[in-house]
Image 1 (cartoon, one colour):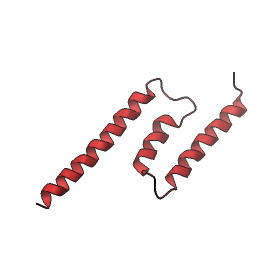
Image 2 (cartoon, helix red, strand yellow):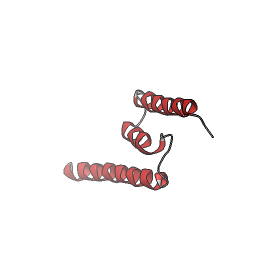
Image 3 (cartoon, one colour):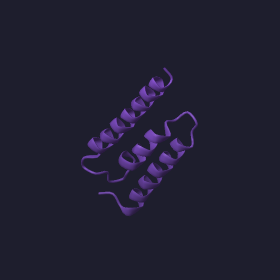
Image 4 (cartoon, helix red, strand yellow):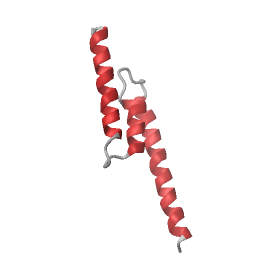
Length: 75
């Protein structure tokens, strides 16, 4: 069983990791946001993978739709 101190340390580590990823220029900021929201948690939801996958698929769909719209507008 972990004590409150190590739980706080893990929480700080995960928060710092998320902030560090957001601060990098060569990282997908929207994907990092999804990771922070779902994955980088001390106690993630039981369906964390499903939730993250839905958000990632929505992000990918929006990006594809934007590309298609841009290409059809320029034709």
